[in-house]
Structures are given as C-alpha cells and as structure tokens.
Image (cartoon, rainbow, N blue to C red; front, top):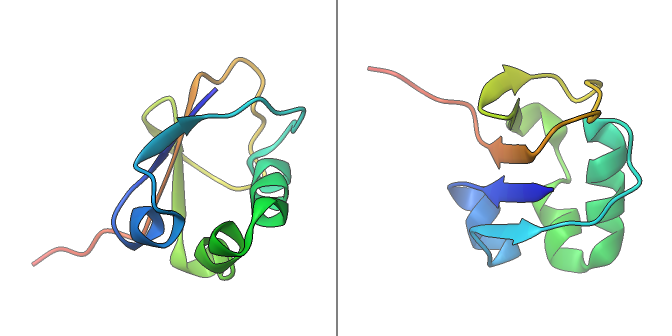
Length: 81
C-alpha cells in the first residue's frame, strides 16, 4: 500500500510517500511496524494524539481495518482560522 506523510511527519521521516508491504490488519498495527523500522519513524509516531490518519482519502481512526485500503496518509490535525 502507499503511505503518505504530510507536514512535520514528512520532515521527521524524510519522505513524502513510500510503498509499504505489510501484514498489519489495522492502522495501529501498521504504526507499530513503522515505529520499529528506525528512530525517525519512532519519533514521527511517538504521540498518536498529535496525528490524524486518512484511509483512501477519508478521515479514519487508528483502530480502523486496513482491509482493501490502497492509501494511508498521516498528518497533523488541521487548524482553521
């Protein structure tokens, strides 16, 4: 699946996107796999309360299933004004 990173998440990981082969069944399990890769991923995913996730461009939760998902995007909460 394609994993996209935006804003400071992209800056910490150093990539805007990557193709990830995973056996994870939920977003939370995917995050755990990513955290275990390298320190830069661990830093980016250290505080999930500071992150939002979208599955195939629809806002979702970290306990959501990845079944059939083609794209996962991680980004900080949006602020308006």
